[in-house]
Length: 246
Length: 236
Length: 119
Image (cartoon, rainbow over all chains, first blue to last red; front, side, top):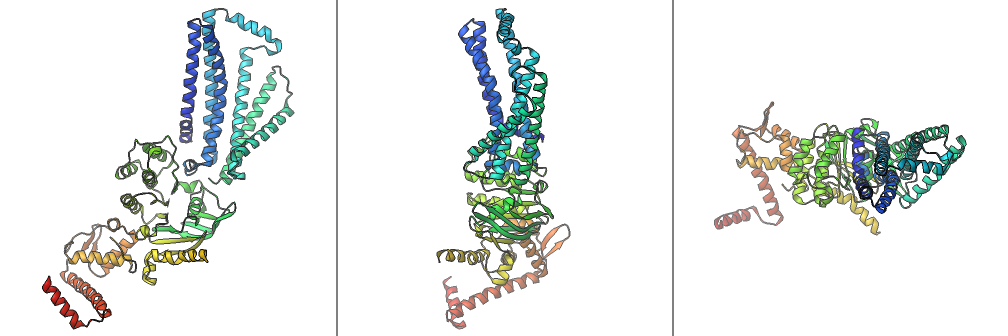
């Protein structure tokens, strides 16, 4: 299993390297803005950094799905399916790589954000007031504090991981049951959308869709998506073991 | 040791393997012969556990092919399948990571004798070098069954001798070697059994020396007898 | 080695080895390659190689010392007999072709003589 995970990481190296380089460039822009007192640089830096933070988590997930698709539908598949590893391990390695990358990247960006905000606060000294101003503007129900921020972030990460699992599932259904070569990509996408809609409808049975923060709702959400991920993983691996011809 | 019991594989609109029943025993080198598209590759992939039969089953030591059998069955496909980022050395490390029977020492020896370079990227290999690399990494395993799909494709005369030597080195009493090819003459002296597959069906398993002794024909002659009808039927 | 397409391969290898022995390219009592080495040398199946030695042993041309390998016989008579047998085979082949051409044995002998003079 360790070896499988190792090679899954190896497959996404270059993509992660690119994200790292781009982030570094944006961070430099931001730092130039802060230390040279150039407001434009600062604004651009902050915008681009928030953008790359959100994008990179998405890109890593989508790249994982793309890698799985290549590992199932091209000759590369032999590299995995010739080895004495069952599909639970093969797919498990992919999920572990992807989920841990998403979590690590999220944590890194949060840490970077905290560091940057601290730098900003230290330089300008008026940042706390800025935060208070924003919170006052948003009102009571949207009030941002570290607890809420952590909970919402955790829910988003789990939600995104379950989405990646769903992507895996759709790709695998296509490669096994449908076995249709021509419209494989399009079909996968349709299945993905269809199940995705069903899943959020099903979640709606358990919780109301209010916009205000509510700990119980967030926890239900996290548990729901975690369970969905596990079910999708088991179903996908079972399909691969029993129905897959590469 | 390796049995195929009424194995059939149907793809959309085409039957690739049609009811093949046969049994391969250790201590022999088998040639799997037939024109392109006759079903050799499909059968091998089923025995390697890469694709699943539509009906029937392939048994290894009386157990259906699965994860366990991959530990003892080494399969080499015709098409290159390594990751783009790999070097010749990385390919060896990959096999070392996944196959307990892989010997890095043997691999290194073979890489040297095949004039390959450990540092070279697989992406930049010529088709002949790729063919040699695939054979080397497969034969560096100490497997019980070796299945090589068209190992002689695209390689020059000298490399062919090297490949033949590797095959002969690996052969032993307790091993099965199965080599598919459409180059009958190349394999004639090396194999002792030949499996003929014609239009997805098994024609028969022939003993190479037996053919010469009883019918006075070489394997190549027999191949012509069996398959030239096919051409004539096609014309008529 | 190129094999002809009619006779069994093991017989062709046996003949080639006997030829080497008769020609003294392989000496009396000399160790022969293992059957695995023989397989690689002639690019033949290991089972065919094993059969080659079985036959050679049966004919007394070579013998196996336990754990030591296969050796050519020390018995000069067996090798002489081998040469005789191979000469007979060559002669039979020659006479058969001569006969097919409608040449009498006497004519053939004359042809050999005159050929010998030229050589």
